[in-house]
Image (cartoon, one colour):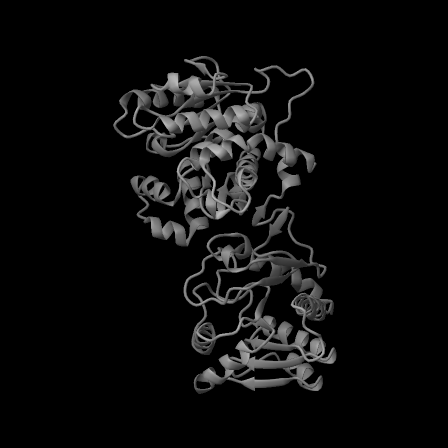
Length: 497
């Protein structure tokens, strides 16, 4: 599992070590230099004579970059530091100059020449801003330099120190000018902005360096890896039968949108539900494509509400409202998607999982008095997913290029497992059926432990993304193909245990 902690948590963990004289900057800069040397070798460039440019800001990240530059210079690398502020880390500056590196102070007039220098580098180390930076992007000379650099030919590999400068370190926002990184080397633990959208898309790879910090047991944001998802995934016992494996009720689809019902029930069956009951007007089509599905009401252990249900579908809306009574009275977990979101009661338990995209979340919150647009949700998905959890009580799975899950005690996951090809009609219906099957199989467990629900939702998002890769690696996928790939994706997941 990839865990992250806020800047305040990291600084608090650093304080006792710094007070005891532990050389944290030496550890960090040594690891940073090692990462840069690996990048140089991977490019096929000889280390002696390789060109590395440092972008140096005022704080400890600038100090890390300068000390790493000194290490690299002693290995024969041509190191040129560009100081983007009048005063940089004193010890780092002295170390770089003592090792034979160069340091140039850049003002507005010097931006064109500095950008040309940076463009010719093999590796560019971004040490402009650190944990204390405010969200909002780069400003001043740094913003001018990055803007000028992007307009020039040349493609140095960018290695960011701790985080790409200018992102929201704690919330993943990415407004204004930011220099995307090919690799981010982060110290002690990952920072939330490296996992959360939209900033997560601004670094291709993350390397976490252990420098001896004692961080809190509970992280700010986590990302499940396959073994983590496998640990919570339901697996039938040797004496299992269809009822112990989970019975899922699905209220989805209509004559106008029959495909949603087919996709949701198909995903639930292929994800391993013991039984799937379908309630709706297109049962004939559902059974024609999935004869395992049982039509009509009956006892269930979890629900999926809403895929393909339109506002003018009075019959389906009545079924959903009636089924919500089971959620309220019997504690049945539920997945609430698409057309059912506007039918959500004022407050629901945490084992109800909402699965909106940004536009649907904006509408849900606006109805409840939080004036927000789709664009605002996309710019600050963590903020608005947390608001949605607070005002509804539900676990919130906000779909997007990186899926954000927020549950009880602000437990937060950020999953980036899906290819961009998965942004296709019907993919959300598949996710709803998949997650419904998981909740049905572990219904008793999520009632006993509310913290399990967000973990299961994150695991479902992981499997959904992996199924898209299985369906057609590197190419376009259709939702039905993703559903059909679920058995293989789950088999591979469980093999990682």
